[in-house]
Amino acid sequence: MPHSIHPDSSASLLVLEPDDDIRPLLKSNLETHGYTVLIALDEADAIQRAMYTPAIDLILINQAEMSTKAAIAIGQRIRQQSNLAASIPIVILAEDYTVQMEGRNVQIAGNQFVAYLEHGQQLLDLLDSLLY
Image (cartoon, rainbow, N blue to C red; front, side, top):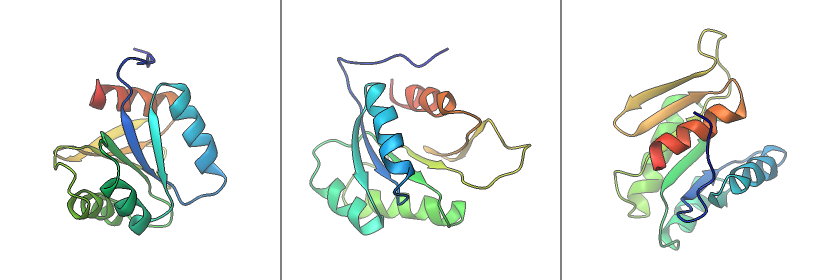
């Protein structure tokens, strides 16, 4: 099922994206699909932004240059240190993976997921399933 735009209930995403080239494209694509996007450049920035933003519905982290385990730990620390609810999903965008993993979304634990993207629509569909 294709992702639909949700103009009446825009979910708010905290996106940790350190890459200067990817960041504006990801932000634009998510906003085009009806999401409110709050960008953070690193963990400390994400914690600060989450502390002063009234409603964060999902944390999205690009795995850039770290292990999946480290990325999940960052998401958990962002939730804990900014007093976000433990129920807020964490989605990790995997950076390097095998062809066998491509196109899969893997639930690591509870509401923590790793997306091995084959295409951008896969991310939108995952976000849609977690938020609406």
